Every structure is written in structure tokens, then in C-alpha cells.
Image (cartoon, rainbow, N blue to C red):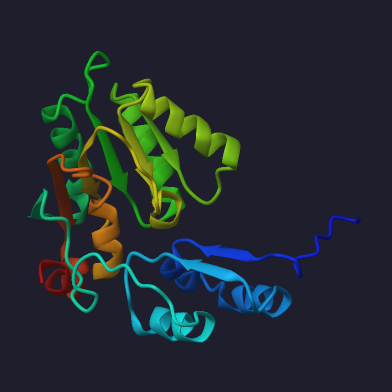
Length: 230
């Protein structure tokens, strides 16, 4: 009643994208939920990365867990099916280079079947790039924190059905997306850390398919370059 839900009878708890939930500051909410539900619950805990913050939370909420690890938990590695390229570029050149790559990939052709995901670090830049691409004749859309769920679903469906060829997104909005046929990821803005970079380029090269990623690095990104290359 009154929009409240009793959770004391919950016997299964699933935490998906646990690393991202902690990054976004949701640990207090997670712990509050844990206080209310049964201690005899089954807990499913999924995370793409394994930093110390995630390990600490896992050790506190899991009891004698059965672990499934894919890859080396201590070594963050990008998907080997993705060809990675870094372009050193001045900030004012990025938009022109983006257009060149998109056109070279055939994404300005409405009859093509390719798909591309472009990452920007701010909601404002997402909208700016999407509008720039659209005005240049490239079918495009965007997803970010200012879009409601209906708008996000519409953009994803447009990409799935080839109504648009390019989707511009922020890290949070694109986390966990499985975009079938996405052959190209462009990091218009460099990722803030290696974990976000791995998540980004992991949107291509899925299920054994080959993928390609391009990351723009400008002078302002100099501090990030070494970690990403490693």
C-alpha cells in the first residue's frame, strides 16, 4: 500500500553490473536493501571488473560463493576480437575525423547494415554529436541520463531496425547494452579509466565476431593515454 513493498520475504537477490553500481554511489542503497531481506537468501552477483571495492562488497554479502571467472581477475584485458586504434588528434579536429570515419564505414548510407556506437563523456556532447551527424545526413540518435526510458528504448529499437546507423552514448547509458551487429566503437572522448575503456569497446566484437574501435586522444587527454595503451 502507498507505493511500499515488503521485501522481508525475498529469497533471491541479483546484483547486476555491481561495479558500475558502486561507481555511481549506490552502495548505501544496496546495503539498506540487504538489511531488509532474508539472510537465507540466494545472492547472484555479476560484475565485469573486479576492483578492491567490488571484492570487499562481495566478501561481505556472499557466503561460500560458487565463483565463475572469465579471464584473469587481476588483469584487465580488452576483448582480443576487437582491433583497437588510437588517433592522436587536436580537439578542434575531432568532429571532422568522426565524420570521415563514419562515412568511410558506409554509415551515411541508409541502405547499409553497419552499426556504430560513439562514446562522449557528457550529455551535452552526446546531443551535439547526434545533431551534427543527423544534419550531415547520417541517421543517428543518442542515449544519456536526460533521456527517459521510453526515449532510450526508441533509440535502441531504431538502431536495431536500421532506422539509425550511429548511436551516441555516455558510459552509464550504454553500460550492459548488447547491440547485435555493432562493428565499430568510436571513443570521441577518451574514457576516464581503463575499466570504462574495456566496457566501451566490449560493445563490439561480441559472440566471436570481429570488431573495430577508434579512440581519439588529444593533448588534454595526455594523462589517460598511458593507462589505456597498457
